[in-house]
Amino acid sequence: MFETSKKNKFESGIIVGIFILVITLIVYYICHALRLGTMSIVIALIFSIGSAWASYYYSDKIVLSLNKARPATKEEDQKLVNILDALMVTAGLPNKPKLYVVDDAQPNAFATGRNPQNAVICVTTGLLEKLDYYELEGVIAHEMSHIKNYDIRLSCVVSVMVGFIVMLSDLFSRTLFWGGMKDRDSDSKANGILMLIGLIFLILAPIFGSLMQLALSRKREFLADSTAVEFTRNPDGLISALEKLENDPNQLETANNATANMYIINPFKKNAKNAKKRSTNIWSTHPSTADRIESLKNLKY
Image (tube, rainbow, N blue to C red; front, side, top):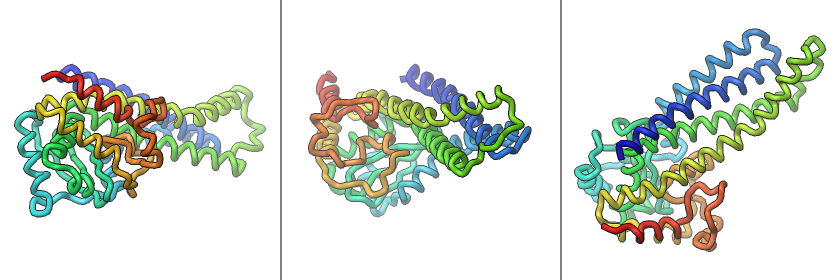
C-alpha cells in the first residue's frame, strides 16, 4: 500500500510537469499566432503555472461544481455517515473525508481531492436508495481506497488539465479559422516550421491527454476494488453493488467526459445492455464490470 501511494505521488509530479510544458507550448503558439511578439513566452509561462496551481488546489471544488454536488447531512444521510465512521477504523486514513451528495437516480459514486487530508467522497441519491448496507459499504470502501492510494490527486488533476488542453486547442483552432496566422511575411522559414510543429502538437495533445487519463483510470480500478475488500473483508458486498450499478438503466444527468473516469462505474449508459459483453479498449473509462467482478471472485480471504 505504501509503495502504491509513493508511486502515485511520483506519477502525479511527473504528469503535472508534463502538462505545464504542454500548456506552455500551446499558449505560446496561440500568443505567437496573435502576434504578441516576445511577450508570448512570458504569457505562456504565467498561464501554465497558474493553471497547474489552480488544478492542484481547486480541482476538487471544480469537480464538485461540475457535478452539482451538495454537502451530505447527518440527519438525511445517517446510513452513509455510519458506514464512513466504521470504515475509518480499518482504512487508516489520517482525516475523515467530507461527504457530498448528487441528486440523481443513477447509483454511482466518486472520490476527489488533492490528498487524504483534503478528500471528498461523493455519492448519488440513487446509490443511497438502491443499495443495501453491505453494498454501500463496498462502494464507500472502494472510494476510500482511491483516497488512501492517492489516486484522487492524479485523476482529479489530470481531468482538469486535460480540460484545459482541450479548451486551449479549441481556442487555437478558432484563431486559425479567423486567419490569425495569415500574412506573416516578416517571419522566418524556421519560425514557420515551428508554428507547423506547434499546430500538429495542438491537434494531438488532447487525444494523448485523454488516452492517458483513461489508462490511469482503468489501471487503478482493480487495485481500488481489491483494497476495498481488505477494508471490509466482504467481497460479496462490492460484487453485488457493481452488478446493481451496471444493470441500472438511469442516465446520470450531471455526467461529462471530463470527470466520467472518476466514478466507480462509467456514468454513461447508452450501451448498458451490451456492457457485460463489451471488452475493455483504449477508449474505455473503466475496465469492464464483468472483469472486475471476476477479479473480486478470485480473491481469497
